[in-house]
Length: 491
Image 1 (cartoon, rainbow, N blue to C red):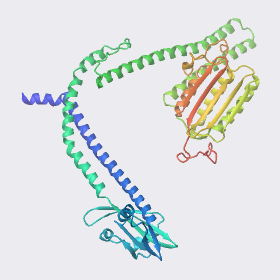
Image 2 (image 1 turned 180 degrees about the horizontal axis):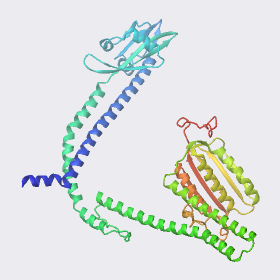
Image 3 (image 1 turned 180 degrees about the vertical axis):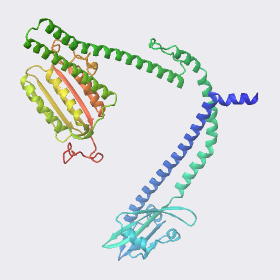
Image 4 (image 1 turned 90 degrees about the vertical axis):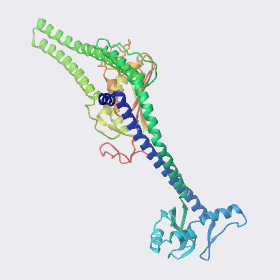
Protein backbone atom coordinates (compact mmCIF):
# COMPACT_ATOMS: atom_id res chain seq x y z
CA UNK A 1 0.00 0.00 0.00
CA UNK A 2 2.78 2.41 0.90
CA UNK A 3 4.74 1.57 -2.24
CA UNK A 4 1.58 2.23 -4.30
CA UNK A 5 1.09 5.61 -2.68
CA UNK A 6 4.77 6.38 -3.15
CA UNK A 7 4.51 5.42 -6.80
CA UNK A 8 1.42 7.56 -7.34
CA UNK A 9 3.19 10.44 -5.63
CA UNK A 10 6.29 10.26 -7.84
CA UNK A 11 4.17 9.87 -10.99
CA UNK A 12 2.05 12.88 -10.14
CA UNK A 13 2.25 15.94 -12.37
CA UNK A 14 2.96 18.17 -9.39
CA UNK A 15 5.98 16.09 -8.36
CA UNK A 16 7.31 15.90 -11.91
CA UNK A 17 6.84 19.63 -12.44
CA UNK A 18 8.65 20.36 -9.19
CA UNK A 19 11.56 18.01 -9.98
CA UNK A 20 11.88 19.35 -13.51
CA UNK A 21 11.72 22.92 -12.28
CA UNK A 22 14.28 22.14 -9.55
CA UNK A 23 16.71 20.46 -11.96
CA UNK A 24 16.43 23.22 -14.53
CA UNK A 25 16.80 25.95 -11.93
CA UNK A 26 19.78 24.19 -10.35
CA UNK A 27 21.49 23.95 -13.73
CA UNK A 28 20.62 27.56 -14.42
CA UNK A 29 21.99 28.77 -11.07
CA UNK A 30 25.17 26.77 -11.60
CA UNK A 31 25.57 28.12 -15.13
CA UNK A 32 24.90 31.66 -13.90
CA UNK A 33 27.51 31.22 -11.21
CA UNK A 34 30.15 30.15 -13.71
CA UNK A 35 29.07 32.91 -16.10
CA UNK A 36 29.33 35.58 -13.40
CA UNK A 37 32.66 34.18 -12.32
CA UNK A 38 33.90 34.31 -15.91
CA UNK A 39 32.64 37.87 -16.36
CA UNK A 40 34.18 38.91 -13.05
CA UNK A 41 37.49 37.33 -14.02
CA UNK A 42 37.41 39.14 -17.37
CA UNK A 43 36.57 42.45 -15.69
CA UNK A 44 39.35 42.08 -13.13
CA UNK A 45 41.80 41.13 -15.86
CA UNK A 46 40.77 44.16 -17.94
CA UNK A 47 41.16 46.45 -14.94
CA UNK A 48 44.60 45.00 -14.25
CA UNK A 49 45.66 45.65 -17.85
CA UNK A 50 44.30 49.21 -17.71
CA UNK A 51 46.09 49.95 -14.43
CA UNK A 52 49.30 48.47 -15.80
CA UNK A 53 48.97 50.68 -18.90
CA UNK A 54 48.60 53.74 -16.66
CA UNK A 55 51.65 52.73 -14.64
CA UNK A 56 53.60 52.11 -17.86
CA UNK A 57 52.80 55.62 -19.10
CA UNK A 58 53.77 57.06 -15.72
CA UNK A 59 57.05 55.10 -15.73
CA UNK A 60 57.96 56.47 -19.16
CA UNK A 61 57.26 59.98 -17.84
CA UNK A 62 59.53 59.61 -14.80
CA UNK A 63 62.28 57.46 -16.33
CA UNK A 64 65.09 59.30 -18.17
CA UNK A 65 68.63 58.44 -19.25
CA UNK A 66 71.83 60.34 -18.61
CA UNK A 67 74.86 58.99 -20.42
CA UNK A 68 72.95 55.76 -21.05
CA UNK A 69 72.29 55.38 -17.34
CA UNK A 70 68.65 55.25 -16.12
CA UNK A 71 67.51 57.99 -13.77
CA UNK A 72 64.08 58.30 -12.15
CA UNK A 73 63.48 62.04 -12.36
CA UNK A 74 60.92 63.31 -9.88
CA UNK A 75 60.52 65.72 -6.95
CA UNK A 76 61.87 63.82 -3.96
CA UNK A 77 60.34 66.36 -1.60
CA UNK A 78 56.82 65.79 -2.98
CA UNK A 79 55.38 62.79 -1.08
CA UNK A 80 52.82 62.08 -3.80
CA UNK A 81 55.41 61.78 -6.55
CA UNK A 82 57.69 59.77 -4.29
CA UNK A 83 54.82 57.35 -3.55
CA UNK A 84 54.03 57.01 -7.26
CA UNK A 85 57.63 56.22 -8.19
CA UNK A 86 57.92 53.79 -5.28
CA UNK A 87 54.80 51.99 -6.51
CA UNK A 88 56.18 51.87 -10.06
CA UNK A 89 59.42 50.34 -8.81
CA UNK A 90 57.73 47.47 -6.97
CA UNK A 91 57.95 45.04 -9.88
CA UNK A 92 60.23 46.16 -12.70
CA UNK A 93 63.35 45.31 -14.62
CA UNK A 94 65.40 47.50 -16.98
CA UNK A 95 68.16 46.17 -19.27
CA UNK A 96 70.08 47.30 -22.31
CA UNK A 97 69.50 45.76 -25.71
CA UNK A 98 71.92 42.90 -24.89
CA UNK A 99 70.01 41.88 -21.78
CA UNK A 100 72.42 43.39 -19.24
CA UNK A 101 70.42 44.39 -16.17
CA UNK A 102 70.60 48.10 -15.43
CA UNK A 103 67.96 48.32 -12.70
CA UNK A 104 65.51 45.94 -11.09
CA UNK A 105 63.31 45.55 -8.05
CA UNK A 106 63.75 42.88 -5.40
CA UNK A 107 60.38 41.39 -6.30
CA UNK A 108 61.38 41.01 -9.94
CA UNK A 109 64.63 39.36 -8.89
CA UNK A 110 62.63 36.85 -6.85
CA UNK A 111 60.49 36.16 -9.90
CA UNK A 112 63.62 35.51 -11.95
CA UNK A 113 65.28 37.76 -14.48
CA UNK A 114 64.13 37.47 -18.08
CA UNK A 115 66.46 35.41 -20.26
CA UNK A 116 68.50 37.30 -22.91
CA UNK A 117 66.80 35.28 -25.67
CA UNK A 118 63.39 36.37 -24.42
CA UNK A 119 64.54 39.97 -24.19
CA UNK A 120 65.84 39.96 -27.76
CA UNK A 121 62.62 38.41 -29.09
CA UNK A 122 60.51 41.04 -27.30
CA UNK A 123 62.75 43.88 -28.54
CA UNK A 124 62.27 42.57 -32.07
CA UNK A 125 58.50 42.72 -31.62
CA UNK A 126 57.00 46.18 -32.31
CA UNK A 127 54.11 45.57 -29.90
CA UNK A 128 54.23 45.10 -26.16
CA UNK A 129 54.05 41.59 -24.70
CA UNK A 130 51.93 40.71 -21.66
CA UNK A 131 52.72 37.74 -19.44
CA UNK A 132 51.42 36.28 -16.21
CA UNK A 133 54.16 35.07 -13.88
CA UNK A 134 53.68 33.15 -10.64
CA UNK A 135 55.95 34.15 -7.75
CA UNK A 136 57.62 31.84 -5.21
CA UNK A 137 54.68 32.22 -2.79
CA UNK A 138 52.04 31.57 -5.44
CA UNK A 139 51.17 35.22 -6.10
CA UNK A 140 50.45 35.97 -9.73
CA UNK A 141 51.97 39.01 -11.44
CA UNK A 142 50.92 40.66 -14.69
CA UNK A 143 54.05 41.74 -16.59
CA UNK A 144 54.21 44.11 -19.56
CA UNK A 145 57.44 43.99 -21.56
CA UNK A 146 58.48 46.25 -24.40
CA UNK A 147 61.26 48.48 -25.68
CA UNK A 148 61.97 52.13 -25.00
CA UNK A 149 64.26 54.32 -27.07
CA UNK A 150 66.53 57.13 -25.85
CA UNK A 151 68.86 58.87 -28.32
CA UNK A 152 69.07 55.89 -30.65
CA UNK A 153 69.71 53.54 -27.75
CA UNK A 154 67.21 50.77 -27.17
CA UNK A 155 66.38 49.52 -23.70
CA UNK A 156 64.22 46.71 -22.43
CA UNK A 157 61.64 47.54 -19.76
CA UNK A 158 59.47 45.04 -17.92
CA UNK A 159 56.87 46.46 -15.55
CA UNK A 160 54.45 44.44 -13.48
CA UNK A 161 51.81 44.55 -10.79
CA UNK A 162 50.55 41.85 -8.41
CA UNK A 163 47.19 40.21 -9.04
CA UNK A 164 46.64 39.04 -5.47
CA UNK A 165 43.68 41.39 -4.86
CA UNK A 166 42.00 40.26 -8.08
CA UNK A 167 42.56 36.61 -7.18
CA UNK A 168 41.21 37.15 -3.67
CA UNK A 169 38.10 38.86 -5.03
CA UNK A 170 37.52 36.01 -7.48
CA UNK A 171 38.03 33.35 -4.80
CA UNK A 172 35.73 35.15 -2.37
CA UNK A 173 32.96 35.34 -4.95
CA UNK A 174 33.37 31.67 -5.90
CA UNK A 175 33.31 30.43 -2.30
CA UNK A 176 30.38 32.63 -1.23
CA UNK A 177 28.26 31.83 -4.27
CA UNK A 178 28.70 28.08 -4.29
CA UNK A 179 28.28 27.82 -0.51
CA UNK A 180 24.94 29.62 -0.84
CA UNK A 181 23.92 27.55 -3.88
CA UNK A 182 22.53 24.47 -2.00
CA UNK A 183 20.34 26.69 0.16
CA UNK A 184 19.06 28.48 -2.95
CA UNK A 185 18.28 25.14 -4.57
CA UNK A 186 16.33 23.90 -1.53
CA UNK A 187 14.38 27.14 -1.34
CA UNK A 188 13.71 26.88 -5.07
CA UNK A 189 12.39 23.32 -4.63
CA UNK A 190 9.97 24.46 -1.94
CA UNK A 191 8.72 27.36 -4.01
CA UNK A 192 8.41 25.09 -7.04
CA UNK A 193 6.28 22.64 -5.06
CA UNK A 194 3.95 25.43 -3.90
CA UNK A 195 3.67 26.98 -7.36
CA UNK A 196 3.03 23.61 -9.00
CA UNK A 197 0.18 23.04 -6.57
CA UNK A 198 -1.37 26.41 -7.47
CA UNK A 199 -1.06 25.67 -11.20
CA UNK A 200 -2.48 22.14 -11.19
CA UNK A 201 -5.74 23.15 -9.46
CA UNK A 202 -7.38 25.18 -12.27
CA UNK A 203 -5.93 23.11 -15.15
CA UNK A 204 -9.01 20.88 -15.32
CA UNK A 205 -11.29 23.92 -15.45
CA UNK A 206 -9.32 25.31 -18.37
CA UNK A 207 -9.33 21.93 -20.12
CA UNK A 208 -13.13 21.64 -19.84
CA UNK A 209 -13.61 25.13 -21.22
CA UNK A 210 -11.27 24.37 -24.13
CA UNK A 211 -13.19 21.17 -24.97
CA UNK A 212 -16.33 23.21 -25.59
CA UNK A 213 -14.65 25.15 -28.38
CA UNK A 214 -15.39 23.78 -31.87
CA UNK A 215 -15.00 24.98 -35.44
CA UNK A 216 -18.49 26.46 -35.33
CA UNK A 217 -17.86 28.37 -32.10
CA UNK A 218 -14.73 30.36 -32.82
CA UNK A 219 -16.15 33.28 -30.86
CA UNK A 220 -15.89 31.32 -27.59
CA UNK A 221 -13.14 32.48 -25.23
CA UNK A 222 -11.82 31.04 -21.97
CA UNK A 223 -12.34 33.56 -19.15
CA UNK A 224 -9.26 34.77 -17.31
CA UNK A 225 -8.88 33.69 -13.69
CA UNK A 226 -7.64 37.12 -12.59
CA UNK A 227 -4.58 35.68 -10.86
CA UNK A 228 -2.13 37.30 -13.26
CA UNK A 229 0.11 34.21 -13.22
CA UNK A 230 1.53 31.98 -15.95
CA UNK A 231 -1.77 30.14 -16.35
CA UNK A 232 -3.58 33.41 -16.98
CA UNK A 233 -0.89 34.21 -19.53
CA UNK A 234 -1.49 30.81 -21.15
CA UNK A 235 -5.25 31.48 -21.28
CA UNK A 236 -4.63 34.91 -22.77
CA UNK A 237 -2.30 33.39 -25.35
CA UNK A 238 -4.92 30.77 -26.17
CA UNK A 239 -7.57 33.45 -26.62
CA UNK A 240 -5.21 35.40 -28.85
CA UNK A 241 -4.68 32.26 -30.90
CA UNK A 242 -8.44 31.95 -31.28
CA UNK A 243 -8.57 35.56 -32.49
CA UNK A 244 -5.90 34.79 -35.07
CA UNK A 245 -7.71 31.62 -36.15
CA UNK A 246 -10.94 33.54 -36.57
CA UNK A 247 -9.12 36.22 -38.56
CA UNK A 248 -7.52 33.52 -40.71
CA UNK A 249 -10.88 31.89 -41.39
CA UNK A 250 -12.35 35.26 -42.33
CA UNK A 251 -9.35 35.98 -44.54
CA UNK A 252 -9.77 32.62 -46.27
CA UNK A 253 -13.46 33.32 -46.81
CA UNK A 254 -12.70 36.79 -48.15
CA UNK A 255 -9.92 35.42 -50.33
CA UNK A 256 -12.26 32.78 -51.74
CA UNK A 257 -14.86 35.45 -52.43
CA UNK A 258 -12.32 37.70 -54.13
CA UNK A 259 -10.88 34.87 -56.23
CA UNK A 260 -14.36 33.75 -57.26
CA UNK A 261 -15.22 37.30 -58.28
CA UNK A 262 -11.98 37.87 -60.18
CA UNK A 263 -12.23 34.57 -62.02
CA UNK A 264 -15.95 34.79 -62.64
CA UNK A 265 -15.70 38.07 -64.55
CA UNK A 266 -13.36 36.87 -67.35
CA UNK A 267 -15.06 33.46 -67.46
CA UNK A 268 -18.44 35.10 -67.91
CA UNK A 269 -17.02 37.31 -70.64
CA UNK A 270 -15.47 34.34 -72.43
CA UNK A 271 -18.69 32.35 -72.24
CA UNK A 272 -20.77 35.28 -73.43
CA UNK A 273 -18.53 35.98 -76.39
CA UNK A 274 -18.49 32.35 -77.45
CA UNK A 275 -22.28 32.01 -77.07
CA UNK A 276 -22.82 35.15 -79.11
CA UNK A 277 -20.45 33.85 -81.77
CA UNK A 278 -22.25 30.51 -81.93
CA UNK A 279 -25.66 32.16 -82.25
CA UNK A 280 -24.91 35.16 -84.45
CA UNK A 281 -21.60 34.70 -86.26
CA UNK A 282 -21.97 33.70 -89.89
CA UNK A 283 -18.59 34.48 -91.43
CA UNK A 284 -15.03 33.32 -90.63
CA UNK A 285 -14.11 36.92 -89.75
CA UNK A 286 -16.82 37.09 -87.10
CA UNK A 287 -15.73 33.77 -85.62
CA UNK A 288 -12.10 34.93 -85.65
CA UNK A 289 -13.02 38.18 -83.90
CA UNK A 290 -14.94 36.28 -81.20
CA UNK A 291 -12.06 33.86 -80.73
CA UNK A 292 -9.54 36.72 -80.44
CA UNK A 293 -11.61 38.45 -77.77
CA UNK A 294 -12.01 35.15 -75.93
CA UNK A 295 -8.25 34.55 -76.09
CA UNK A 296 -7.63 38.01 -74.65
CA UNK A 297 -9.88 37.20 -71.70
CA UNK A 298 -8.18 33.80 -71.33
CA UNK A 299 -4.82 35.58 -71.20
CA UNK A 300 -6.16 37.88 -68.50
CA UNK A 301 -7.44 34.89 -66.59
CA UNK A 302 -4.05 33.21 -66.90
CA UNK A 303 -2.37 36.34 -65.57
CA UNK A 304 -4.60 36.27 -62.48
CA UNK A 305 -3.86 32.59 -61.85
CA UNK A 306 -0.10 33.07 -62.36
CA UNK A 307 -0.04 36.07 -60.04
CA UNK A 308 -2.00 34.21 -57.36
CA UNK A 309 0.27 31.16 -57.59
CA UNK A 310 3.41 33.28 -57.44
CA UNK A 311 2.14 35.30 -54.48
CA UNK A 312 1.04 32.11 -52.69
CA UNK A 313 4.47 30.55 -53.24
CA UNK A 314 6.15 33.70 -51.98
CA UNK A 315 4.09 33.97 -48.80
CA UNK A 316 4.46 30.25 -48.03
CA UNK A 317 8.24 30.35 -48.39
CA UNK A 318 8.40 28.20 -51.53
CA UNK A 319 9.85 31.02 -53.62
CA UNK A 320 13.62 31.01 -53.02
CA UNK A 321 15.27 34.40 -53.35
CA UNK A 322 18.56 34.59 -55.25
CA UNK A 323 20.15 37.38 -53.26
CA UNK A 324 23.38 39.05 -54.34
CA UNK A 325 25.06 42.38 -53.79
CA UNK A 326 22.83 44.53 -56.01
CA UNK A 327 23.47 48.09 -57.15
CA UNK A 328 19.96 49.45 -56.63
CA UNK A 329 20.89 52.72 -58.34
CA UNK A 330 21.83 51.01 -61.61
CA UNK A 331 18.74 48.80 -61.42
CA UNK A 332 16.48 51.82 -60.89
CA UNK A 333 18.02 53.66 -63.86
CA UNK A 334 17.36 50.63 -66.09
CA UNK A 335 13.72 50.35 -64.94
CA UNK A 336 13.18 54.11 -65.21
CA UNK A 337 14.05 54.06 -68.92
CA UNK A 338 11.27 51.52 -69.54
CA UNK A 339 8.61 53.94 -68.25
CA UNK A 340 9.69 57.04 -70.11
CA UNK A 341 7.50 56.25 -73.15
CA UNK A 342 4.41 55.52 -71.04
CA UNK A 343 4.93 58.79 -69.17
CA UNK A 344 5.34 60.76 -72.40
CA UNK A 345 2.07 59.33 -73.74
CA UNK A 346 0.21 60.75 -70.72
CA UNK A 347 2.29 63.97 -70.71
CA UNK A 348 3.65 63.13 -67.26
CA UNK A 349 7.02 64.46 -66.16
CA UNK A 350 9.37 61.72 -64.98
CA UNK A 351 11.86 63.08 -62.44
CA UNK A 352 14.60 61.22 -60.64
CA UNK A 353 17.27 61.84 -58.07
CA UNK A 354 19.34 58.68 -57.78
CA UNK A 355 22.59 58.65 -55.84
CA UNK A 356 25.16 56.34 -57.46
CA UNK A 357 26.25 52.97 -56.13
CA UNK A 358 23.63 52.32 -53.44
CA UNK A 359 24.25 48.63 -52.83
CA UNK A 360 21.86 46.25 -51.04
CA UNK A 361 21.73 42.46 -50.61
CA UNK A 362 18.72 41.60 -52.74
CA UNK A 363 17.13 39.50 -55.47
CA UNK A 364 17.36 41.37 -58.79
CA UNK A 365 14.13 39.91 -60.15
CA UNK A 366 12.13 40.96 -57.11
CA UNK A 367 13.67 44.44 -57.08
CA UNK A 368 12.64 44.81 -60.73
CA UNK A 369 9.11 43.73 -59.80
CA UNK A 370 8.97 46.17 -56.87
CA UNK A 371 10.10 49.13 -58.99
CA UNK A 372 7.79 48.16 -61.85
CA UNK A 373 4.75 47.94 -59.59
CA UNK A 374 5.41 51.24 -57.80
CA UNK A 375 6.21 53.20 -60.97
CA UNK A 376 3.35 51.71 -63.00
CA UNK A 377 0.87 52.55 -60.22
CA UNK A 378 2.25 56.08 -59.98
CA UNK A 379 1.84 56.67 -63.73
CA UNK A 380 -1.54 54.92 -63.86
CA UNK A 381 -3.10 57.12 -61.18
CA UNK A 382 -1.46 60.42 -62.16
CA UNK A 383 -3.48 62.58 -64.57
CA UNK A 384 -2.02 64.35 -67.58
CA UNK A 385 0.34 67.18 -66.73
CA UNK A 386 1.32 65.62 -63.43
CA UNK A 387 4.71 64.30 -62.33
CA UNK A 388 6.25 61.12 -60.95
CA UNK A 389 9.50 61.21 -59.01
CA UNK A 390 11.89 58.40 -58.12
CA UNK A 391 14.54 58.98 -55.45
CA UNK A 392 17.25 56.67 -54.14
CA UNK A 393 19.53 57.85 -51.35
CA UNK A 394 22.37 56.17 -49.47
CA UNK A 395 22.26 56.79 -45.74
CA UNK A 396 24.57 55.61 -43.00
CA UNK A 397 22.49 52.56 -42.04
CA UNK A 398 20.07 52.03 -44.89
CA UNK A 399 19.21 52.64 -48.52
CA UNK A 400 15.97 54.58 -49.09
CA UNK A 401 13.84 54.33 -52.21
CA UNK A 402 10.99 56.78 -52.67
CA UNK A 403 8.34 56.90 -55.40
CA UNK A 404 6.02 59.90 -55.27
CA UNK A 405 3.42 61.26 -57.63
CA UNK A 406 0.94 64.11 -58.01
CA UNK A 407 -1.95 61.74 -58.70
CA UNK A 408 -5.43 61.28 -57.35
CA UNK A 409 -4.25 60.21 -53.89
CA UNK A 410 -5.83 57.79 -51.42
CA UNK A 411 -8.29 58.38 -48.62
CA UNK A 412 -6.89 57.88 -45.11
CA UNK A 413 -9.52 55.22 -44.40
CA UNK A 414 -8.26 53.15 -47.35
CA UNK A 415 -4.53 53.31 -46.57
CA UNK A 416 -4.52 50.33 -44.11
CA UNK A 417 -5.94 48.04 -46.83
CA UNK A 418 -3.90 48.90 -49.92
CA UNK A 419 -1.51 45.96 -49.41
CA UNK A 420 -4.40 43.46 -49.18
CA UNK A 421 -4.95 41.08 -52.07
CA UNK A 422 -7.39 42.30 -54.74
CA UNK A 423 -7.91 45.56 -52.89
CA UNK A 424 -8.35 48.50 -55.22
CA UNK A 425 -9.05 52.09 -54.32
CA UNK A 426 -12.57 52.94 -55.44
CA UNK A 427 -13.05 56.57 -56.42
CA UNK A 428 -14.59 58.25 -59.46
CA UNK A 429 -11.07 58.93 -60.73
CA UNK A 430 -9.88 55.29 -60.40
CA UNK A 431 -12.96 53.30 -61.42
CA UNK A 432 -11.86 53.18 -65.04
CA UNK A 433 -8.41 51.82 -64.26
CA UNK A 434 -7.71 48.16 -64.96
CA UNK A 435 -5.70 45.94 -62.62
CA UNK A 436 -5.68 42.78 -60.52
CA UNK A 437 -5.17 44.45 -57.17
CA UNK A 438 -2.12 42.24 -56.48
CA UNK A 439 0.76 44.59 -57.30
CA UNK A 440 1.05 46.21 -53.88
CA UNK A 441 0.66 42.80 -52.20
CA UNK A 442 3.80 41.78 -54.07
CA UNK A 443 5.52 45.01 -53.05
CA UNK A 444 4.71 44.40 -49.39
CA UNK A 445 6.03 40.82 -49.53
CA UNK A 446 9.22 41.82 -51.37
CA UNK A 447 10.03 44.51 -48.81
CA UNK A 448 9.49 42.12 -45.88
CA UNK A 449 11.50 39.35 -47.58
CA UNK A 450 14.46 41.75 -47.79
CA UNK A 451 14.17 42.88 -44.14
CA UNK A 452 12.99 46.28 -45.29
CA UNK A 453 10.24 48.68 -44.34
CA UNK A 454 7.63 50.48 -46.42
CA UNK A 455 5.68 53.59 -45.43
CA UNK A 456 2.96 55.33 -47.38
CA UNK A 457 1.59 58.83 -47.14
CA UNK A 458 -1.15 60.22 -49.34
CA UNK A 459 -3.56 63.10 -49.67
CA UNK A 460 -6.57 62.96 -51.99
CA UNK A 461 -6.12 65.20 -55.00
CA UNK A 462 -2.44 65.90 -54.24
CA UNK A 463 -0.66 62.58 -54.66
CA UNK A 464 0.89 59.58 -52.95
CA UNK A 465 4.34 58.81 -51.65
CA UNK A 466 5.81 55.31 -51.08
CA UNK A 467 9.01 55.27 -49.00
CA UNK A 468 10.96 52.00 -48.83
CA UNK A 469 14.12 51.45 -46.78
CA UNK A 470 16.49 48.47 -47.07
CA UNK A 471 19.40 47.55 -44.79
CA UNK A 472 22.72 48.77 -46.11
CA UNK A 473 25.17 45.90 -46.54
CA UNK A 474 28.57 45.83 -44.96
CA UNK A 475 31.06 45.55 -47.85
CA UNK A 476 33.38 43.50 -45.66
CA UNK A 477 30.73 40.94 -44.70
CA UNK A 478 29.29 39.97 -48.08
CA UNK A 479 31.05 38.57 -51.11
CA UNK A 480 30.59 40.98 -54.01
CA UNK A 481 28.73 39.79 -57.07
CA UNK A 482 30.55 40.84 -60.25
CA UNK A 483 27.27 40.91 -62.17
CA UNK A 484 25.50 43.33 -59.90
CA UNK A 485 28.07 45.19 -57.83
CA UNK A 486 30.39 47.90 -59.13
CA UNK A 487 34.12 47.85 -58.53
CA UNK A 488 33.89 50.21 -55.59
CA UNK A 489 31.18 50.06 -52.96
CA UNK A 490 29.98 53.31 -51.45
CA UNK A 491 31.71 54.34 -48.30
